[in-house]
Length: 369
Image: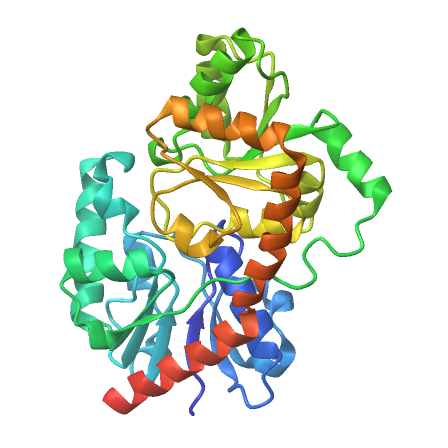
């Protein structure tokens, strides 16, 4: 196989960045993996496994901009294969295109986008993906169904390839670093944990309301930590917590590195995942890797990912959620059972497997050329 091009400009983004890092880790462990042409900023070059790198093209135009289209390298326009890890594909590319669709949030919830221009951009670019991509990778059955329904993509062009968890995640934690992390973010000794950006589909107002009710009734006193927020999300969620009168027991944490993530989970009594919409839902797997029990929304694809290793609830039913949470916190056998099932569930996900399946998609796309 001739060297595929891989766009790594989102290597440090949440979600897509985890996907790119995991894909590279998996590829690096495959002896017959091809060398790649990488397309990204100079600061990411040291993070690329040397054995995978044929050439590195330096570009770093703003994501979702006209500049990223205009500045696409002329030398790459007619290359045989380009893998775009998101829907912002290079419109000037004329070879075989492989695209990973992580979710269709920008089509399902257009109101989450900041302007009419952003909504039109998302609609246009997804249309171009549907028209141009030889092969499309989706990360869950739920997204496969949405891609077929909303983008009218032929099922033969879609391949389901799951995310995974790095086997080294959370291994050999340093107690001193754990203490430093807790002190840095003023974390309590134990807490409920929610992880993710602040968007309407993350359902945080529902979570805050339910926990406020449980504290008022005296049924629960454990604090909540919400982590992974950008600066705008920190400000908005802080204001919401104050408005609802829950700021005294809600700790908000901004972005954190992948190396810090295990320390965040290590003191959690449970992961609470109340999302209304996900493309995959990585935090439940991260919690399972850290032996943290999971209570999660029953909206797809979360049950697909968590299997039988989570306690599920309707994310629109406060009473169902409160009952499930109290049951989890009061039943040590249930928690131990979920942790054990979580360890077994993780065996389904592996970055080397993901990388091999991705190489097979590349071969399919090349054959279609």
